[in-house]
Length: 114
Length: 114
Image (cartoon, rainbow over all chains, first blue to last red; front, side):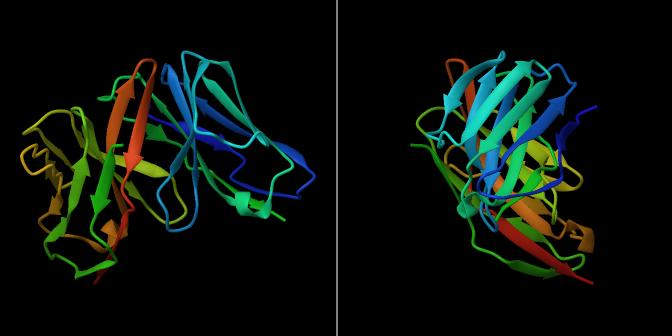
């Protein structure tokens, strides 16, 4: 099973709301990733977790707060977002952290900030 | 830094036509190379990969060969179907201590008509 699941599928939130995105994989992968994808653009890396520790933060604003409670679960906590943060948020995982390992992507959460 | 360049789209073909989507890369080391496909409203799916020079990745009739001398990884398919209509992303993988990072091209939209 090469499935990464993400919830919710769609989310609409106001600029003062707090919400969370959830990502789960049961493939035993030890690296997990958050990407942001705007329309007609490639995904942009936000965060990388390796063995449940934050390895990369691509200078993401603090209104995005990642959390990796265990090796199967990855959350993205959202607070005080701006309309320009509206995008498709993709989670991915890989079995290893060397460059030869492919990443498996979830279906994404489409976020709209009003 | 490392980068990936893809041909501009959209690429418009009739069913059963031959497909080529060009991809070239710039990298300081020896990256792994990937093609991902994204269908409307979905996440990315791994299509194929190659991890070293002269490797050929193949899947579902698609092929790409890792050419170190021309720094290319062109995607080909002998006979496209309407169901192949999607956005195709070429990517390279950089590895470092404790992390792996995908660098994507801009994506090429393929439209196949009956």
